[in-house]
Image 1 (cartoon, helix red, strand yellow):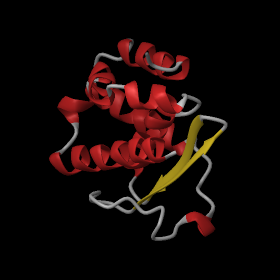
Image 2 (cartoon, helix red, strand yellow):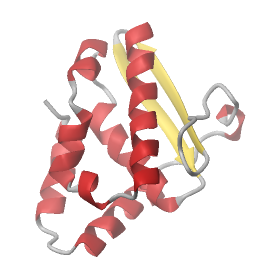
Image 3 (cartoon, helix red, strand yellow):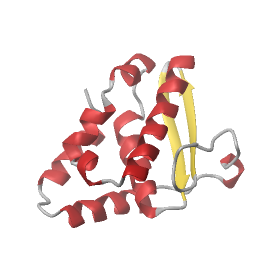
Image 4 (cartoon, helix red, strand yellow):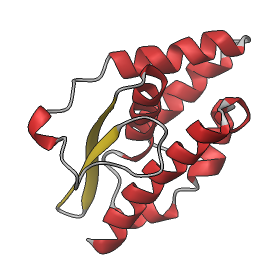
Length: 135
């Protein structure tokens, strides 16, 4: 049930045999994002549970979810970009139906992130889902 943009990323990952190349692709995804407006880097948008500093500005409009974010760690910026491909533009019900762990598993991310990064990824997913559930 992933977005077309996420499916494109899955296809890109399928062409890369080496995890280091996949890791670089995730980082490149993060580098391609527009930086978060500094005015949005406030306690309300900060995600707890991440080893690095992470801010997610999640918005629901007309029943659809979108978000921007930023981290002070390159790999985490990349993970934010991956989550944006997975969730942005979905209806609130679709957001709740996404099995993010399974989708990230399709990229091999579950097996190659440190425990701290995995915890941070879970915290970001939880923030997205909480916002969708509360809207």
